[in-house]
Image (cartoon, rainbow, N blue to C red):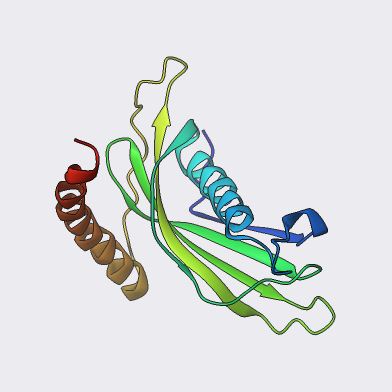
Length: 158
């Protein structure tokens, strides 16, 4: 296997079919782009087929307009035995001006699986830079918070 790829950026133009009734790109389209980038990033890191296990903390900050150049940046910030925490950031701009604006960010957890859907071991990511260490520590804190949120959410599934 080649050296794992920790990050990836998808770039494309927002198209008319991505628009909601308000004339802006709808959140569902943005979430799809996030999921695609998370898959590409996790597959590049693990060398395996990966599935989405969790998407959370999604924050829509600014609208995206049709014709905008959209960049979805994804990078591994934590690895478990088979899971990868992927930090994602969506930026958009007028392609003539290249005035990038942060529009959305979130965390997605992907899991590497085999052909039977069983989780597979992945390479360990070790943070090196101060920024990497901070993001890794944040991912660990978020795991603890998700456990508490999951416990609270049980009332909705019982």
